Image 1 (cartoon, rainbow, N blue to C red):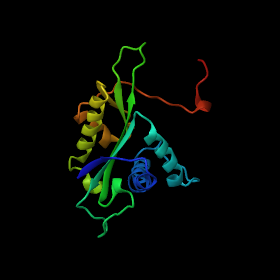
Image 2: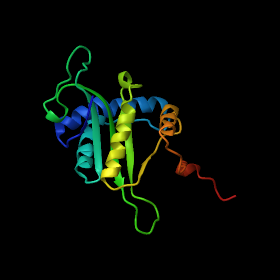
Image 3: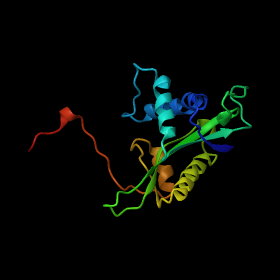
Length: 184
Protein backbone atom coordinates (compact mmCIF):
# COMPACT_ATOMS: atom_id res chain seq x y z
CA UNK A 1 0.00 0.00 0.00
CA UNK A 2 1.30 3.41 -0.94
CA UNK A 3 -0.12 6.72 0.23
CA UNK A 4 0.38 9.45 -2.38
CA UNK A 5 -0.51 13.11 -2.49
CA UNK A 6 -3.29 13.70 -4.99
CA UNK A 7 -2.08 15.92 -7.81
CA UNK A 8 -4.16 18.75 -9.24
CA UNK A 9 -4.52 17.06 -12.61
CA UNK A 10 -7.87 16.36 -14.22
CA UNK A 11 -7.32 12.61 -14.74
CA UNK A 12 -6.18 12.00 -11.17
CA UNK A 13 -8.98 14.07 -9.68
CA UNK A 14 -11.61 12.38 -11.86
CA UNK A 15 -10.39 8.95 -10.75
CA UNK A 16 -10.38 10.09 -7.12
CA UNK A 17 -13.90 11.53 -7.34
CA UNK A 18 -15.35 8.48 -9.10
CA UNK A 19 -13.43 5.83 -7.16
CA UNK A 20 -13.33 7.25 -3.63
CA UNK A 21 -15.13 10.55 -3.08
CA UNK A 22 -18.49 9.49 -4.49
CA UNK A 23 -18.53 6.03 -2.84
CA UNK A 24 -17.58 7.66 0.48
CA UNK A 25 -20.44 10.13 0.29
CA UNK A 26 -22.90 7.45 -0.85
CA UNK A 27 -21.98 5.33 2.20
CA UNK A 28 -22.24 8.33 4.50
CA UNK A 29 -25.60 9.25 2.96
CA UNK A 30 -26.89 5.78 3.94
CA UNK A 31 -25.96 6.14 7.63
CA UNK A 32 -26.23 9.88 8.32
CA UNK A 33 -29.64 11.46 7.80
CA UNK A 34 -28.27 14.95 7.16
CA UNK A 35 -25.83 13.84 4.46
CA UNK A 36 -28.13 13.38 1.47
CA UNK A 37 -26.56 14.13 -1.91
CA UNK A 38 -28.35 16.20 -4.52
CA UNK A 39 -30.33 14.21 -7.10
CA UNK A 40 -30.55 16.91 -9.73
CA UNK A 41 -26.85 17.49 -10.49
CA UNK A 42 -24.01 15.52 -12.04
CA UNK A 43 -22.04 14.98 -8.83
CA UNK A 44 -18.79 14.02 -10.57
CA UNK A 45 -18.94 16.96 -12.98
CA UNK A 46 -19.61 19.36 -10.10
CA UNK A 47 -16.97 17.95 -7.76
CA UNK A 48 -14.01 17.81 -10.18
CA UNK A 49 -13.57 21.59 -10.69
CA UNK A 50 -14.22 22.21 -6.99
CA UNK A 51 -11.58 19.66 -6.00
CA UNK A 52 -9.07 20.97 -8.58
CA UNK A 53 -9.49 24.45 -7.13
CA UNK A 54 -9.01 23.16 -3.56
CA UNK A 55 -5.84 21.29 -4.56
CA UNK A 56 -4.35 24.56 -5.81
CA UNK A 57 -4.72 26.25 -2.40
CA UNK A 58 -1.65 26.33 -0.18
CA UNK A 59 -3.08 24.82 3.00
CA UNK A 60 -5.15 22.01 1.50
CA UNK A 61 -3.87 18.49 0.87
CA UNK A 62 -5.44 15.21 -0.22
CA UNK A 63 -3.69 11.84 0.07
CA UNK A 64 -4.80 8.71 -1.70
CA UNK A 65 -4.03 5.16 -0.59
CA UNK A 66 -3.25 2.99 -3.62
CA UNK A 67 -2.94 -0.78 -3.41
CA UNK A 68 -0.39 -1.54 -6.13
CA UNK A 69 -0.80 -5.29 -5.76
CA UNK A 70 -4.58 -5.26 -5.69
CA UNK A 71 -6.98 -5.65 -8.50
CA UNK A 72 -10.62 -4.91 -8.76
CA UNK A 73 -12.89 -7.35 -10.57
CA UNK A 74 -9.86 -9.08 -12.05
CA UNK A 75 -8.42 -5.99 -13.74
CA UNK A 76 -5.83 -3.40 -12.90
CA UNK A 77 -7.47 -0.04 -12.44
CA UNK A 78 -5.39 2.03 -14.86
CA UNK A 79 -5.34 5.76 -15.43
CA UNK A 80 -3.54 8.01 -17.86
CA UNK A 81 -2.32 10.09 -14.92
CA UNK A 82 0.96 8.92 -13.36
CA UNK A 83 -0.12 10.13 -9.91
CA UNK A 84 -2.71 7.34 -9.68
CA UNK A 85 -1.49 5.01 -12.39
CA UNK A 86 -2.58 1.44 -11.79
CA UNK A 87 -3.51 -0.18 -8.54
CA UNK A 88 -6.73 -0.04 -6.59
CA UNK A 89 -7.82 3.08 -4.78
CA UNK A 90 -8.20 1.97 -1.17
CA UNK A 91 -8.88 5.17 0.75
CA UNK A 92 -8.14 8.84 1.21
CA UNK A 93 -7.75 11.67 3.68
CA UNK A 94 -8.04 15.42 3.13
CA UNK A 95 -6.55 18.08 5.38
CA UNK A 96 -6.39 21.84 5.66
CA UNK A 97 -4.24 24.08 7.83
CA UNK A 98 -6.29 26.25 10.19
CA UNK A 99 -4.07 29.02 11.51
CA UNK A 100 -5.18 30.61 14.75
CA UNK A 101 -5.89 34.34 14.55
CA UNK A 102 -3.56 36.24 16.86
CA UNK A 103 -6.47 37.33 19.09
CA UNK A 104 -7.12 33.74 20.17
CA UNK A 105 -4.98 31.68 22.50
CA UNK A 106 -5.10 28.38 20.67
CA UNK A 107 -2.57 26.53 18.56
CA UNK A 108 -2.62 26.32 14.80
CA UNK A 109 -4.13 23.03 13.72
CA UNK A 110 -4.67 20.78 10.78
CA UNK A 111 -8.30 19.91 10.20
CA UNK A 112 -9.15 16.54 8.68
CA UNK A 113 -11.90 17.26 6.19
CA UNK A 114 -12.71 13.72 5.06
CA UNK A 115 -11.26 10.29 5.67
CA UNK A 116 -12.49 7.13 3.99
CA UNK A 117 -11.35 3.53 3.62
CA UNK A 118 -13.09 1.22 1.15
CA UNK A 119 -14.70 -1.89 2.63
CA UNK A 120 -12.07 -4.47 1.60
CA UNK A 121 -9.37 -2.42 3.38
CA UNK A 122 -11.19 -1.77 6.65
CA UNK A 123 -9.56 -3.37 9.67
CA UNK A 124 -6.13 -3.38 7.99
CA UNK A 125 -4.73 -0.33 9.76
CA UNK A 126 -5.14 1.88 6.69
CA UNK A 127 -7.39 4.39 8.50
CA UNK A 128 -4.70 4.74 11.15
CA UNK A 129 -2.07 5.24 8.42
CA UNK A 130 -4.20 7.99 6.90
CA UNK A 131 -4.60 9.73 10.28
CA UNK A 132 -0.83 9.39 10.76
CA UNK A 133 -0.37 11.11 7.39
CA UNK A 134 -2.61 13.94 8.61
CA UNK A 135 -0.59 14.18 11.83
CA UNK A 136 2.63 14.31 9.77
CA UNK A 137 1.10 17.15 7.77
CA UNK A 138 0.33 18.98 11.03
CA UNK A 139 3.91 18.57 12.26
CA UNK A 140 5.32 19.67 8.88
CA UNK A 141 3.12 22.77 8.93
CA UNK A 142 4.14 23.62 12.52
CA UNK A 143 0.67 22.88 13.88
CA UNK A 144 0.24 21.55 17.39
CA UNK A 145 -3.23 20.08 16.99
CA UNK A 146 -5.23 17.77 14.73
CA UNK A 147 -9.00 18.34 14.59
CA UNK A 148 -11.99 16.94 12.72
CA UNK A 149 -15.76 16.98 12.59
CA UNK A 150 -17.66 13.72 12.78
CA UNK A 151 -21.36 13.11 12.37
CA UNK A 152 -22.93 12.00 15.64
CA UNK A 153 -24.78 9.23 13.75
CA UNK A 154 -21.52 7.75 12.46
CA UNK A 155 -20.89 5.58 15.50
CA UNK A 156 -18.09 3.55 13.91
CA UNK A 157 -16.12 6.71 13.09
CA UNK A 158 -16.73 8.21 16.53
CA UNK A 159 -15.42 5.04 18.20
CA UNK A 160 -12.35 5.00 15.93
CA UNK A 161 -11.48 8.64 16.67
CA UNK A 162 -11.95 8.15 20.42
CA UNK A 163 -9.64 5.13 20.28
CA UNK A 164 -6.97 7.37 18.73
CA UNK A 165 -7.34 9.92 21.54
CA UNK A 166 -9.63 12.49 19.91
CA UNK A 167 -11.93 14.22 22.38
CA UNK A 168 -15.05 16.31 21.78
CA UNK A 169 -14.23 20.00 21.90
CA UNK A 170 -17.36 21.62 20.54
CA UNK A 171 -20.93 20.72 19.82
CA UNK A 172 -22.51 21.87 16.57
CA UNK A 173 -26.25 22.29 16.75
CA UNK A 174 -28.67 23.07 13.94
CA UNK A 175 -32.25 24.03 13.27
CA UNK A 176 -34.20 24.93 10.15
CA UNK A 177 -34.63 28.70 10.01
CA UNK A 178 -38.41 28.39 9.89
CA UNK A 179 -38.33 26.17 12.99
CA UNK A 180 -36.52 28.62 15.30
CA UNK A 181 -38.69 28.97 18.38
CA UNK A 182 -40.06 32.42 19.12
CA UNK A 183 -39.05 34.14 22.35
CA UNK A 184 -40.67 32.41 25.33
